[in-house]
Length: 252
Ligand SMILES: C[S@@+](CC[C@H](N)C(=O)[O-])C[C@H]1O[C@@H](n2cnc3c(N)ncnc32)[C@H](O)[C@@H]1O
Image 1 (cartoon, rainbow, N blue to C red):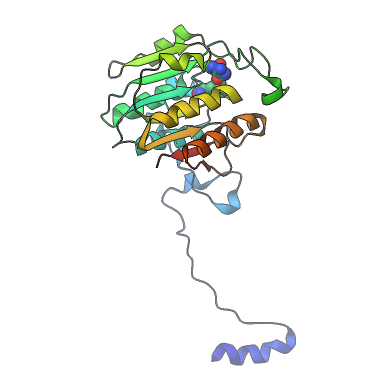
Image 2: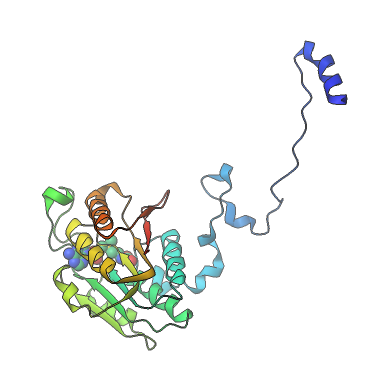
């Protein structure tokens, strides 16, 4: 009533009385430091910045992976989601082994003694098809650590760990896993992505989770095509993560 009356008087001079909305954001937030970043105006929550995660994101993990803290957080949370799911761990494209180390550590925290199957050439790209993968990729690119260093990093008294060297798909024959609970696909190229994804989807238990590292990256467009084709074949859906190169799959 008062506002209506005041607005009638203020209208001729171009002013309006408006209700001030109550403060909806607590000020300060209890974990204020975790809301900072380049999109400051959005004040997004970034739990991967929490120093409490240093317990998992150890030098053994961070010092031996190409994955950012943000991507490692996604990987870690997805491994956690498989708590009640039977099966082994699998990674195509283990590189220097940091992400694999995290998969083993998080499984151990869950009280699970999962077997781990970790595959790489351990010599970078050794087979490239420029007509499919593009002319921007070449033999010997993406060469990370040698196998013996990765074996050392992944040594684990609580788990049976297999570090398998050679080209995917040939090395998939050495993976003696009937059931998988969690798989990480990070090989960038079409053929190993297609074959490893199909291999995993055949074995992934219901409730099992897959993380694809390079689904949204334009340089890995051929890998995305391989993942989409495998998902169509096995009747599964992939979820592209916004503002990340990663995508997720929850087995139905
Ligand atoms: C982006 S790197 C993996 C990064 C790793 N996951 C990490 O945590 O840093 C991609 C890996 O795929 C491997 N790779 C590519 N093609 C492969 C194939 N056909 N068979 C096995 N490994 C392959 C490369 O040797 C390279 O180590």
